Structures are given as C-alpha cells and as structure tokens.
Image (cartoon, rainbow, N blue to C red; front, side, top):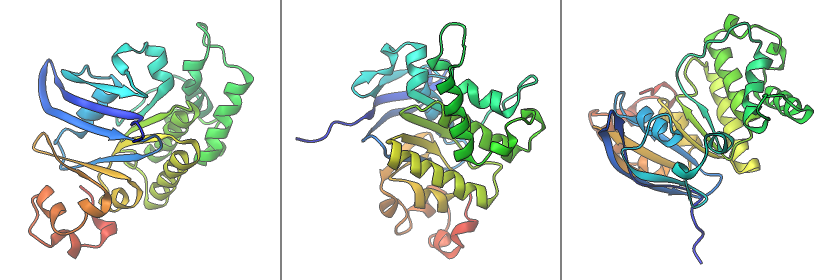
Length: 257
C-alpha cells in the first residue's frame, strides 16, 4: 500500500484581495521531508508560503495536514502544528531573547499564557540548539539582523511543531550561520520528523538541503522535482533567464537569486 502524504496542497490558488497570482498548486510530501521554493524575485514564493500558513486566505483549493484540511483547524491547533518564520522584521517592546523564544510555547499554554517548567525547558533547549544561549538575557532589539534571525529560529524550534515554514531564513546570515541553520533544519527533519517548507535565494544551499524543489516563475509553478532533476542540464538558466551554461560557469557558493 502506498504511504499517504503527510502534507498536501491540492488545487491551491494564492493571491491578494481575491485575485489569484499563482493558480493550481499541487504537491504531496511525506513527513520529515524538506521542500524548497526557488525562483526569481517577485515570482510569488512568499505569497505561496503565506497562503500555506493562513496569513493569506486561499482563493481556491486546500491545504491538508495528516488528511485534515487546515481550514477546519482552530487557530490554536494550527499554531501548534505549523511554526512560521517569515521575512517581516519583528519589533518587540522590552523583551529579552529568552522572552521572544518563550513566545513559541504559547500554543501550549492556558488562556493566561502561563508557562510551565516544561515550556521553559523547551525554550532553553531551543536556544542551545540554535547557539544563542549567550544572548538569552539581551534585549532583542539591540541585536544584529543575523542574531535576530537565529533567535527567531530558536522560537520556531521551541514551538515543537510538526511543520516549519520559513521565508528566506538565511537572509542576514553569513555563510557560517547559513550552514549552521540548514544543519539545524536537517536535524529537525531527520530526528524529529519535522516537515520543512521554505524559500531560498541561495541556490547552492537549496541544492544541498532539499528533498524536493518547487520552481516558481512568472507567477506559476514552472517545475517540481528532486535537486538532481532541477539542477541538472540548463534548467536553472531557463528559470532565471540566463544564457545557457551561465549557472554552471559560476562558483556555486556565489549564486544568489
């Protein structure tokens, strides 16, 4: 018997104000897989991610998790199932990094938002895993953009959700922390079974970390495949309107789109 998908997008149309920008999105993922969206700026990658997470209402189609439509889930249930790290700058008022990470535990608290000892331990574990324990008592707003990004990743990890959605998570990070972040994502997918859905500009990272690549161009799904399928031949040149052979002639670690 064929294994049922854990995460599924069926006939999804994403857009704004009831006007679709990308239509007929379909994909099925097993639990613990890493799906990466790539494509030119403005193609609609963020729009798709925000529709998956419910930050934007879907215009048509459905998103299913373990066979259940996300439209049938309560906000709290959805928050405990999907952790989100988007590109919007987070602004806090007199919050330490520990405070920010602990907000990832709110889907598990009571109506008063009181943290249990286990919630606090989960936040401490997430900070240690993200390598930010030394920042725990720092005011979040005093950090560099790269440090803030690592704190937000720790917050998402503290949420202990089955699905993690990230929009350009490597932005503002130097190569060391880019690789550490992706190592964390791979660990979550392999050890915890977390399904990761993200967008990346750094193609060399997408090629190395992903199980499945979804390519978006001209506000449509242009291709879906494994990294070996997507990054072979001259397809990447076509995706980004480059001259044939351009992508392979560049050093992989210099390719950002």
